[in-house]
Image (cartoon, rainbow, N blue to C red; front, side, top):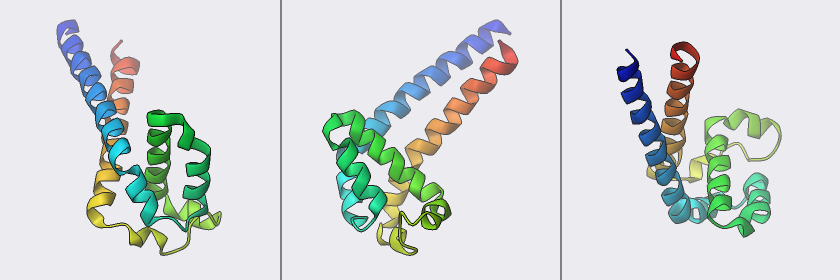
Length: 120
């Protein structure tokens, strides 16, 4: 049983490493393109000003905040940080590319948490 848990843990750690590489590559390539589509958003403009000087980490933080904006749009609309139909400006392929690494990373993190809590 412990050997199987060890292999599962190694697989999850390797998967998390791949997800982090995926997030950083996507952030370096597409964050500014996505921000160009959402240039009217106060949230995006403020994040760009706050995190633009942080390099790759800042780009990943901006990318993650935009992904969160797509995952919970009603919260951002209620607070007045985005307009109602502003998120429709982004093409569907960019939306999928934006959200996929963060969702996969969340699933892998949750799997790691379950392994830690219930089996170790």
